[in-house]
Image (cartoon, rainbow, N blue to C red; front, side, top):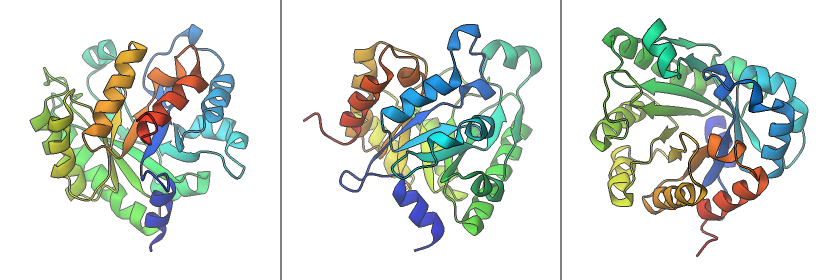
Length: 263
């Protein structure tokens, strides 16, 4: 096995073959506001919930590395790029995308995997072309460095009216698989059987679904179950975990869904 395979396998539970990753990379691209609380206290709760991994930005990892520097801690998944996620900013400033960390730098920071966006249908087609090229380059670099690349395939470009269009999500996810993604993070489209079509489109590349904006707890659990029923290899949920009143309890509920312990 290559180092990439070893590190990717560590992200997934031995018994279920699935993974719950808590995303806490929002502050880099999204206005959190003064009431978002202490990052350290939030991360302490996230880690206490014992997901398989935590998605962080380089700055958050540097400040709180001690939470992950022990046996049994969640794997570190590093956000390696940046884009504008706030709709008013995108309309005012235009759509932008930049790579911030290359795979070798991520390994040096202590990451076990990296995540990069692949954003379909921005206003400027040149942005998408540059995005594809950046992800393809990172996939080659990641394989050389021995670290898996998770590509977050989205319909977040301003030309999209439906961000959960299954045909377009399948297309951009297939592009990600074709250019070297080791795993894919994408939307749950609301129907397990339709989701299964997206999963099958990318072949053997594991697909994990994202959580999106904060929602009703029961609706979040139902969506998580639908994604797993649709063949997802796991979940990468952020605000629906760390904005919950009970972060640890919510993590454990989603972990039960992920690993099939609710049936």
